[in-house]
Length: 52
Image 1 (cartoon, helix red, strand yellow):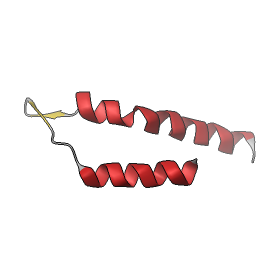
Image 2 (image 1 turned 90 degrees about the vertical axis):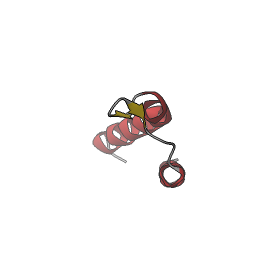
Image 3 (image 1 turned 180 degrees about the horizontal axis):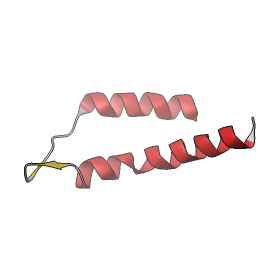
Image 4 (image 1 turned 90 degrees about the horizontal axis):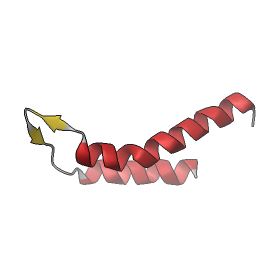
């Protein structure tokens, strides 16, 4: 694996590890927090497993 690929993978890993916090605390529409989305969590877990 070359350095560029490793940098991209590191970025994806770091970004995806922060995603639950962003979704839980940051996503707001019209002054209301968005509801938890089960489908998103399934997709995120699949991506994490693929990368890891």
